[in-house]
Length: 235
Image (tube, rainbow, N blue to C red; front, side, top):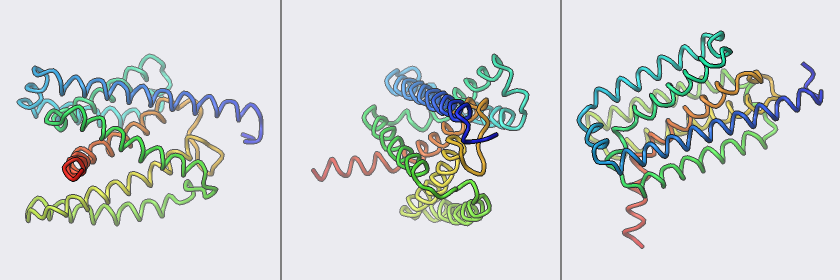
């Protein structure tokens, strides 16, 4: 398709709007449910006791996400695509519930704000930079693999040797990997690059951004509240 064609540009703008709007709705649903999990004692106790239930929900979300990505026909059957997308989002929300019930609402909002700023900066950078990250798939893969090896080393060091700082390094490494993919995903959404998502895949595009957001959020649950509490104490 001719990317200079006005019809292409209009379709792309509509696709971008749909993608970000759906992603924003997913984020609001997540924040509202997490706030309910923290404030409603019955829900908090349930997730504290039934860890196996949240692990099952997370695993189910991963399985359905895999189907959604690889089975193209599923994505273009309108009622089914929306249903699967909502189940995937709900599965991730419930899957992370065990990690947030010990937090306060203030800490939850700070984590959301932190992740929103990180994602916003990466997306703005990807949009403004003339460099085409979609051409660098091999480089991105190699860098991600190297950082993945380092991340496994440091998280193992934390788990077995109880080296506290290694978990922060692990979080930083994984955050860097996710930020690289946010740059790539943003450019595939905005189009005009070597690789781009098709205009009919706005649900998939919003899910991809939501997964990036979820990973960063999960990483922030450990170190952001600690940093915030240290800042409060020193003020």
